[in-house]
Amino acid sequence: MAAAQDGCGLDSAAGNGRRIHLGIPEAVFVEDVDSFMKQPGNETADTVLKKLDEQYQKYKFMELNLAQKKRRLKGQIPEIKQTLEILKYMQKKKESTNSMETRFLLADNLYCKASVPPTDKVCLWLGANVMLEYDIDEAQALLEKNLSTATKNLDSLEEDLDFLRDQFTTTEVTKKKKKKKKKKKKKKKKEKEKEKEKEKEKEKEKEKEKEKEKEKEKEKEKEKEKEKEKEKEKEKKKEEEEKEKKKKEEKEKKKEEKEKKEEKEKEEKEKEEEKEKEKKEERRKKKEEGNP
Image 1 (cartoon, rainbow, N blue to C red):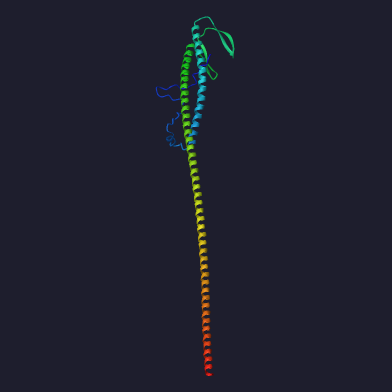
Image 2 (image 1 turned 60 degrees about the vertical axis):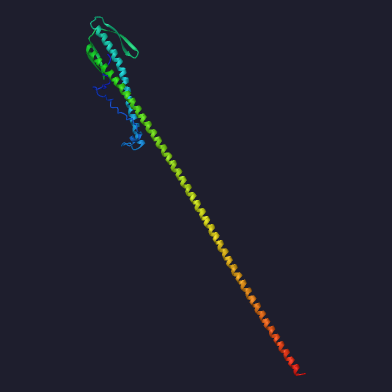
């Protein structure tokens, strides 16, 4: 007869207190990302995202286990119900003298007919290749208890899966928030880097302008020096010209003085010659007077 398992051995709700969801850690909903990042252990965005990914993978693993248990329970509950119906039918027929006609499953899609005499004993599979004989009433009580436990455990599993899905959603929202924050930080970082690059370019341009101004100033200084040299050359030229002029003037002066001197000498000579002539005339006159 059908197995009399107790619904995967899951624990149901304890008392009126808050139900523990099979040790599933509750995901923290992050409202303020900045304050969350200031908490110890949340040094960088990559560290937080890694933790969230690990938690997400744990939830996935738990979901897989719970889904397997749910499938087992969903398979067991119909079997227990079917077995209970058979037991109820046998309960009705145990006082009768007529045997029951039934079919046994030999293999998949293969049944054989059998005739079962009235009985008050049944054998139940307990799992792990163990079978025990029970009275029909005891077997019915055991199966009803197992059905109740399996139904409760299925409800608990549904609650756990719902709770787990909520944790999925919370974790995904937190991850999205964190990724969004990380993207914003990256964007801000890139913008800051761009601003820094722009500032560097501006500084380079300023330095280039300063260098150009320095070069211009140097060129101006060179031009000034050239002009000064030209002025010096002009002054030298002027001095030389003045010197030459002075020399010429001195030469002319000397020449004039010489000419004047020569004229004087000439005049004096002429005077002397006139004097001599006069003297000669006087002498001649005297001679003529002395010799009539």
